Image (tube, rainbow, N blue to C red; front, side, top):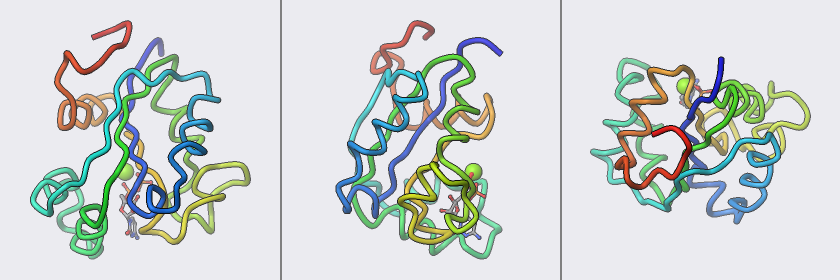
Length: 143
Ligand code: CDP
Ligand code: MG
């Protein structure tokens, strides 16, 4: 697979619960490197744009209001198989089904407030990263 980038978001309830440090420690523990990061509070319009892929889903309006409800920690992870390593450390979408030792198992509240987001494929990762970061804000090996 080679070196990849993945977008990570620590969602509002996890930021509120002061879990940025714990979650970043887990993500860095996979061997991935943080090559860009910022704290943001999205407005509803930007939240709806980020999750546009889910606009037909029943949870879209609740999800976008939730993501816009407080600050989020957005970062870019880089390394070998960054997308799958990030997803594995996150765990299943529903924290009650997430494997032991994953971020969502330990800190997720429910299927919506599940602590973290991670890109699911190279194409979505590229789109998500460019949604939040300018190229000069990314300090990785591969631009
Ligand atoms: O985040 P992930 O890729 O694991 O799941 P998704 O299917 O892409 O859904 C995106 C986000 O929508 C989830 O992380 C949840 O926050 C939310 N969601 C929800 O509120 N209710 C569901 N039944 C499924 C997802
Ligand atoms: Mg997803």
